Length: 569
Image (cartoon, rainbow, N blue to C red; front, side, top):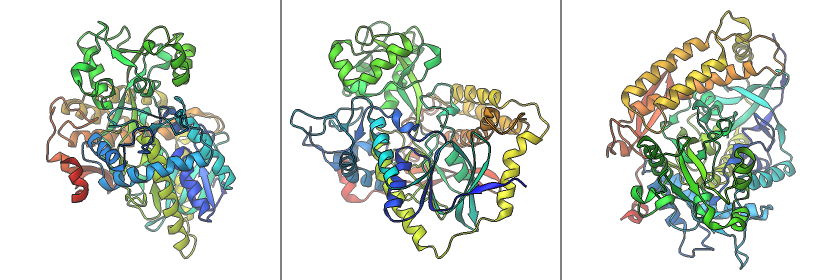
């Protein structure tokens, strides 16, 4: 039997983006030993993709803003299938989390009076996004990373986690391998916090980088955790569209927040037709479908998108307020956005659905397992507002870290991981080297992406989704015949085989949930059911594993208390 390293902690955090770092800091400050596992290098987190700002009702720029308005904006954006309690906690605690980041060293842009500067963003009533130019996520990661290192957290970079392990009904740790050497690692832990982000790599055109393959959600599903509303996948309206090598790379909403205007090939500011009130700062689902419709009706840009124009702002302001976008287009597309409009098109961006968690603690339906950030569901409902992702990370990352620490402290003894469970997992992950087969994991991934892009992206139909499900089940069967050659060192084929299992699980969940939701709501648009159904507005859709098969069921959306419901009358 293969040997493996063992690193034991009270709390193990998987994922080192904003949510994982904030959770790890909270658990360490509670006096527990904490391990932080990241699939890539520390600091190479998807949080840096959130460039435009962090949403919090500070009220420094617009004094009328408060947590109630932020709460109401979030619930409206999510089409009221959000968990109201998560939205309430988020709106109330986001301001303090922003000020905490500032105390820890984050350098936000300032007003002339010295207050934190805030910019407008889509579907937010007031100017609410505190920012650092258009590099806000990067500044957050820098700040949180420094704090985590100071807290003495043990970091395990470039480790792929393949399974969560249980002692009876409770989580007892995780198992994985070092990507460089292929050497196995066992992480015994009293509690595990998942902060593994989303699964955008399921689609062809996505802003997500290679790490976003749904590892955490898939592992949690395998040990009995519920997935909620995973049909709700946000397509960001503005991604790069040309050249092909950068297609899908995010163009931050801050471009429109600073005054950028969308135009079609005829020069028309077309958002005036789709949302005359909010215009270019309408919610992301509305803008993405508008661009898609302009292309379908023959008014798209040369490469199948639209034009986003910031040239009237002037070169100095563009370089000051949007330095990252200026550099991105100049270096990757040889375009000077101070002189000509940029070309953009919708790109799969963010998973609003994910693991079902308790609002106050981040606890999943499996004892000892917690989740925070994009991998968790509830806050965003059917559509996430820009900037809410960054405040989500720190609000619920902190809560998950604190609650996991309390849970771990109260356990009488370290849980035991059965040796036969570890040995079975080793056999499973080494199987691609041993079996006879002729399937290529990279080609299977390409087929999966093509299927999801065509049948489960911006526009969906029942017939198309059913065909997608049939293809996914076919790919799952073929994936059992992948064969990997060579050693475990630096073996990308092996990595892709492991990732593919996760992506197929999430793809099946997305498509089955999308078939079940026979209406159009937020990011989920069914051409054969183009209107909202009031009955589906009262339901969350749940995917869970039962007797080895994926089942779809529904649970009622928690009713909102009267004092909050009055905000919408």
